[in-house]
Length: 453
Image (cartoon, rainbow, N blue to C red; front, side):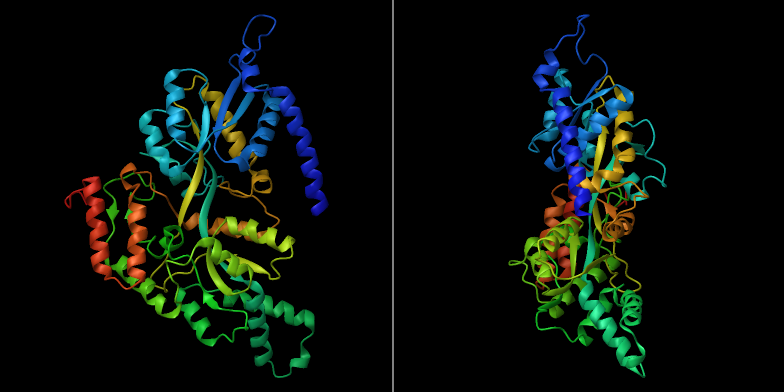
C-alpha cells in the first residue's frame, strides 16, 4: 500500500507539472491571444473558486482530466477564507473574472442565494442512490437544489478496538467450560463477533460498561469528549431540537424547548457525575491526543480523526486498533442525531456558462468522488464509494442520519449561545431556565410568533 501511494504521488506530481505548464499563471491566461485574435479562453473556460488548501492537488488534477475529456478548460483558484462570499459577490457584480462555480458550506447557502450567486442546479443531485437524503437536504433551499454535495464533516463514536477485543476475549474465556478447546484463531474470530455486542448503542450502555470494566492502568477515562464545543455536544438534542427543519431554511420550524430536549439535557447534565470533564480545560485536540495514548476507551470525534490516527499509527505513535461507530442514543426511547456540515459546489447565478459549470460540478462531485479521500482526506458525500479503510465507510452511516447545519442567516449566532447554554447545563445550571432563554432569544431573532408555530 505504501509503494502504491508513493507511485500515485509521483504520477500525480507529473500531472500537476503538466497542468502548470498548460494553464500558466492567471495573468498569462487572461492576456494571451490566439492567432485569430480571440481570447485564449473565450467561452470554454470556467473559473472555480475554493478556500481549502487540501483541495488544491485534487481540483487541479480534475481540471486537467476534464479538459482532456471535453476540451473545456477549468481554472481552479484558491481564495482566502476571509470575506469569501463578499469576494464572490463583488467579483460577480463587477462582471470581471468571476467564479462560475465555487465551494461553500451548506449553512451559507441562504446568504448566497439571496445575493443571487447561488442558482438552481440543472440536475443530478436528487438521486438518493447517488446522494443520501441528508446530502440533498443540505443543498436544498426553499424547495430548490442550489448546489452539488461535495464532502462532509460530522461527529462519530470513536472506540479503542484493542481494549474491547481484550474484554471480548476475557468474556468468552470466562464462559468456556474448557478454555483449552479454543485455538488462538478460534478465539480471535469469536472475539470479533462478541466485540460487535460491546459497541454501545446507548449512553446507558456506556455507563454499564464503565461499571463492569476492569480498566488497564493506562486508562484514565471510559468516555471523554469535548464538552466545550457544540459540534461534539449537539447529538444529545439533535433529534428533537428544531432549527429550520430538515433543510434548515424554514423560520417557522423552531422548537428549542420541549420535553424531549429537556430529558436529553438532563442525561447530559447527569453524565458530569460519572465522567467529570472540566469544560474550561478540555479541547478536541487534547481529547484526541489522550485517545491516541490509550487513556480513553470511547470518545466523540469528527471524521478528520481517522486520518490523524492513521498518521499517528504510521509514525509509531498509536499502538492500538480503533473503530468508528454511530453515536449512541440516550436510551432506547430517546434517540440522538449528530450535526453535519456539507461542503457544496455552487453554480454562480451570474455566470454565463451555467451549463458547462453544472457539467463540471457533476464531474467533480460524482465521477471524481472515488479519489477525493485518498487525495484530500475529506469524505465524499456521494454514496457507494468503497474505502480501503472501513472506518471511513462507517462515517457515512452517521452522516445519513445527521441533521444538516441550518441555512437561516438569523441562526448564525444561535450556535454560540447554544454552546454557552450547554456549558451552563453541564456545570449544574437549571435546564428549564437555560432552554427558556435560548428559545426566547431565537424567537425574537426570527420574529416567529407562537401562532406561527
